[in-house]
Length: 268
Image 1 (tube, rainbow, N blue to C red):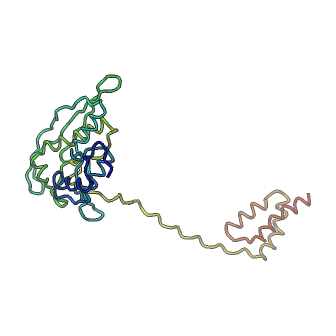
Image 2 (image 1 turned 60 degrees about the horizontal axis):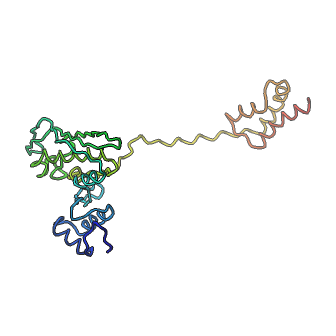
């Protein structure tokens, strides 16, 4: 396997084995291979664990699916590589809330605010602030409960701070990516695409066929129509439109009515 500057000089199989036994214990080999491919594509050192393997519930397949997600450390690395990272504020927390979620009592901050600073090309330092709420970010212990998992219960403040920092880094450095971090996606689910709930359009019934206009009636009426056309009180087009609203005219009948104008022209 061809190595780049960020990949240790060993075979891919050996590297997968090392990652599986050290940084990603218990993970499927295919998932570790995905991590390695991600790092190679992004020129990252996999031994720094810039990404995580996050099992996410797939609502379509009805099973957990390993997904490679960037860690907060990766966003910090990418921001630092720009040479414009000018620091970050200490997390600010909202009032603590104590509540029971599916019978589990947990104390958590209502919100957390983090500001990331970026030095612009003109020398000014811009500040980008993100405010994240605990209830909108915490991971549940399973898909069928509202109780937080062990990490979000034990580190309610620190986990939310990482989510707020990730959002602030994305706002300050949009070029580093927009994917959510592992901390933000842990315990979440791949949702099914939105369903179309707009009212269905019912097919309109086909209009009933109009009765045919009889040749006998046409012959009888032509005698009456000709004087009206000669005196400009009607026209073949008007007659055709009027009759067609109630009857079906054959091409031959339409031609006969149209020729009434020709007769008028000849007499003129």
